[in-house]
Image 1 (cartoon, rainbow, N blue to C red):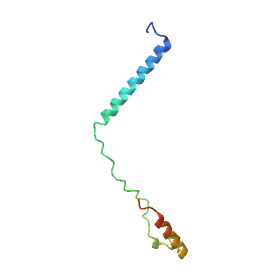
Image 2: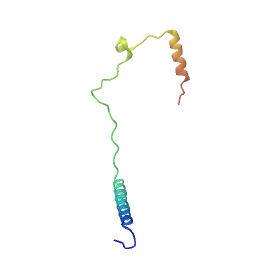
Image 3: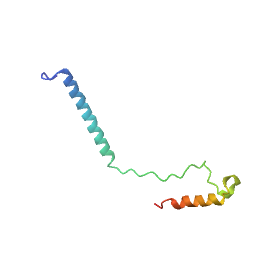
Image 4: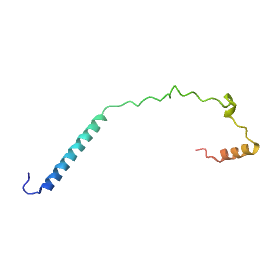
Length: 84
């Protein structure tokens, strides 16, 4: 115990010292881990249990006939989209 400071100040000093020690150890651990190259994981191929997407002609319920007005409105919406 230091005779010139109160007990609360000594506790605060101890907490500050422990926090600094934890920070230094964490920083050293982070820097040590960054020394070694960790290869990136490979591309994900997807789940084999999900079936491939069928074409629109595969089932009649998957396609809809549009009227001429709907086709023109859709074409106008597509033309209004920016090309990046």
